[in-house]
Amino acid sequence: TDPDKDPFTFELVSGPAGLTVSSTGTLTWAVPKNQPAGDVTVKVKIKDQPKEGLPEELVLEFKNKVNKPNLPPVIGQIANQTAQANVKLTLPLVATDPDRDPIIFERSPNVGAIDGTNYTFTPAPADSGKQFQEFITAVDVKNGNPIPHLDKDGNPIIDPLSIASFIISVGDVVPPTL
View 1 (cartoon, helix red, strand yellow):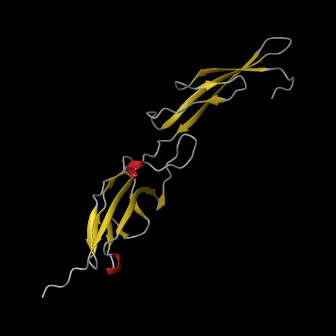
View 2 (view 1 turned 180 degrees about the vertical axis):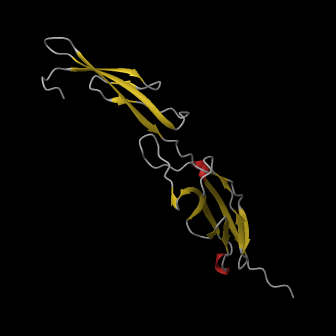
View 3 (view 1 turned 135 degrees about the vertical axis):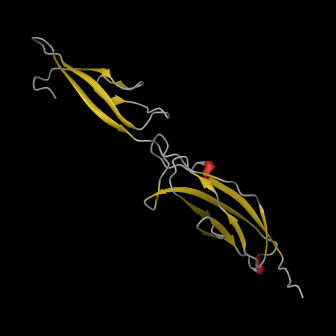
């Protein structure tokens, strides 16, 4: 604020491409996807327009840290499966993370189980003739906590490349061989 209540004008002296400053001094910048992480230096000139005398100028220089966006993992797709009642089905789960973050796997709707990087399911005899659809999601983690993936407005999103969906068709119990 100005003690004399003189109006200010704002002018962008230097900064990254696409950065703007409004007449009220608000800085706006849509960070490009290819923007490298690190410090970005911005200089803004503020002019005081007094009713009498010469204008006064102040140049502010500050740094803003641009964080590298977290890219979601990509999961290997899983083909539909046929399983037998009372026989354990084991499927390896494979995913890569472009940021090289550790990955965990989650499942829904909880038909089978996940043990590290394997999906397992042992159908019961009552499951014979049924089909189950499973969704496995690859989630990257830091310090044991899932890392959220956010859209430009800060809303959580799930990347379709992070999800594998498959159907398990369960056959009859196989009688033991005599």
